[in-house]
Structures are given as C-alpha cells and as structure tokens.
Length: 398
Image (cartoon, rainbow, N blue to C red; front, top):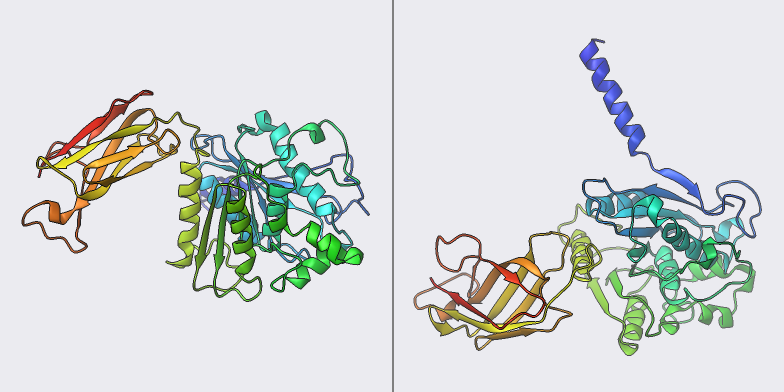
C-alpha cells in the first residue's frame, strides 16, 4: 500500500470513528427499578450532535418502535437521527426498557421523561436551546412520544428525584409517527398493550395510557404521519389523537397517505410516502422551531399591470433558510396576515402568484403565473419588513 492510499484509509477510518454517536446512560448510578446492569436494564441515549457549521440549536429525542417488545433502532433510530442532523438539529436516540425484558408501565414513561429532562438539563453541554426540544417516535415509539406529550406532568411511582428530575419533561413539539394511540378501542394494537402493561393488563390502566384521552390545552403542538393501508396500527389511532387536539385547541397537523404498509420509517426512496419528512421539516420551520423569529402583521394590495390581482398569493421568504416562511392569500387584490402567521422581521424575498387570466393573452399549463421579480429583469424582489409594518403596495409589471 502506497503512502497516499494509507493516508486515505486512515482519514476514512478516523472519519468513521468520529461519526459514531456517544452512548450516555440516563442514570449513571443505575436506573430506578433496574433488574441488572446490562443495556436492556439501563436505558441510554445515543447522541447525534448536528455539525457546528449547520447546527441551529434545536434538538429531538427519537423513540424507535417495536411494539414495546423490541427496538427498530436503525430505520426508526439511526436513520432518523441523521436526517435531523441534515436539518441542523441534534438528535438523541432513546433505548428505553421493554416489556419482553420484564419492564412494564410506568417504566417506559419514566425513561422517556428522563431522556427529555437529561437533554434539557445538559443543554449547554450539547449546545442546544432548552426551549427547543422535540420528540418523535414510531409505532409503539409513537405511543411513547404521545405519552411524553400528554403525560409530562405525571410523576410515576418509582421515579427518582434528583436534580435532573427537577427539570421540565414537556417537549416543545411532538411528532408521533404511525403511532399506537388507543389501548382500549377496537383498533388498538394488542401486542403493544400486552408488552407495555404486562401483568397489569386491565382496562382501567389501558384507558390511563390511551393518549387520545390525555390531551389538554397544555399539550404541545403535534405533527402526525400515517398511512391508510396500515393494517397493523389502523389510522383511527392518529385520527383520534388529532380530533382530541382540535377539541383542546392544540395546534396539530395530520398527514395520512393512502399507500404504504406499517413501519416504513423515513422511506426516502419512495417519491410519494418519502415526502412526509419534508412536510415535517416545513412544519417545524414555520413553528419557529429551527429559528425563533420576530414576526410582523402585514396587509396590503397586489396589482398586475395596474389592475388588482383577482386571486393568488404572496410568499415572504427570509434570507435565513431556518426562519419561517409566510404565505398570504390574495383575494380581489388584498391580503392580510396577523403577527402569528406574518413574515419575519428583516429582509425577505417576495414571490407573487396570480391567475393567468389577470394578464391578457397569457396562457399557462395550470392557469397560474408566478414571479419573483417586480418587473422583468429587475432581479429578486426584496423588501424590508419592520416590527410595525405599514400596508404594502405590491405592483407587478409583465
């Protein structure tokens, strides 16, 4: 082997070693109720910090699924952590205790609460914002995620009471993914219920952990992905959670795709189902999760060649790709957004869409036209948004 080949091999090996996540036990002195010292008895997280040049200070705890009897730690763990890293988000894959190893509720709730508290208590060490810690989980891990989102104030019997346990266990946002939700309805997943509840598998406890019954106005914003063809965990599960969120005025977004079996993970290779993670990314960005941003109320008028746009939209995009994107609907030339939905304060690029019928002789395949220019050849349309923004007059010339 020549020197160049040896140097390349050494570089690749070092790069692989540096890419390995650190393993951190949630209770260094031993987990409460542990039956031994093996990994199956001592819950831990694998830490996947975002690269410094891309990190935006946000973090996610990741809960792989497996029916509370195993852990799908690759496609619902490692792959998900790396995807979050690509968004500038640090990830922490939780290896919680399982029913097949003799651990039953409330052990899993204790473990997930501890994971969130550990990440928050060590925010400075991990270089993250303690106010931007989300949780995502798949299948039974989705149920664990929903418990974290709806039962964060519960103090289970057997939990410890050290300094970490004094930190809030409430996630900032939650993304239960093709989740088990109900343990009492006909569409429940019996395997998850059996493994979670163990010898205490009774209807009273099952109702207690049916998270559609645990939603309150203090539940954090929820994002849900599922498939209609899922016969293992039917779509009635996330629908029940979504409706409970609506009833309690909890911000929620539900995506149910028609095709797809249970347990797909990110499924990035599929051009349809694989798009769900893009919706999650957009939702997180517009929640201000990637970058907390001051937003402003805006209103105004849009004309095309001097006449009001009949219908269309105005999109306000910040120069910072982590910042929320605002979209205002235009009707009869007018648009309006309140402070919650408005553009971020500072420089934004405008994109204006309108009906092709608004321009004589203009014919487009979908009947709409879009421009990022105020007039042809003028370059990107950039304006400054102030905290107290005066009404805007946007004039498009074609």
